[in-house]
Length: 376
Image (cartoon, rainbow, N blue to C red):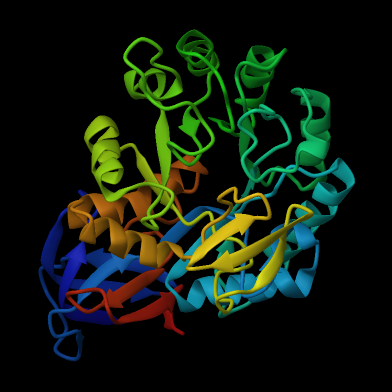
């Protein structure tokens, strides 16, 4: 099947008008020389790869760590509806037995893939190896020092689905953990009170990711540079960013893209079960009570928690905040695919890759979602 007259986000991260082919659930020819007369006319619509959220705890009243398989399926159905065609759900700081159950459900969803659902392509293990002082909304009762054997047992138990594991590099044994864990997944610096030197040592040891930039980490200070400059200086490090306008001011969104460049930014939702819930709703986050008020999720003590947006909204927000369309789309598609090692399968409109794509209006207010070439 061919589609023509489309404004296509191509593999070189630029938009070009032309045609593309979908065959047996994958992309075929892109910008072919000869377009069949019966090609479907998209009338100038924008076509981008399906979005990939590598940091989302839940939506629609469900949370990944509930360990409820039906809830995980409901999450995947919501992601698909909003244009997030692949995802890596994030866990919370909880006991290993709870994480084990949630991770087993992730494995089951992969093994029992169903049409109409976003594809689960990994897990982000957010916690429990965090700083108490920068725990944010993570439950302090379950914080632990780096435990590679515990991590490895969880990784083996879910068949290697952990694609990102988070850690505060200043903790005892963190550097050794990073050197070992990087062999099986991406290691991310997160919920950290580290200074510049410890952060640099963590990145030098092999950490290549920074979880929700600005949040749950020291800010930049001209005499105490901290983790952010250490990440910027290392060209191997990508940085996540929540673009809800609450976790980071629009000016700080622009600064992030200036510092890291569009090739190193990863837009994430960091959504909780409150995403899609009514204003004023009470919900649970990592075993703690939280409320959605004025569009902001907070714990009882006022701590800002997860977001209440989806990644598609975050991408549109980034464009509205002044980020170029090309950088915003790349940061919601190809870059997150690279972060979880899925860039050979998804993340760009390229021959041989899974035909997950969105057909959008020029202002992104409307979208049609295609999973493996089939429209939802």
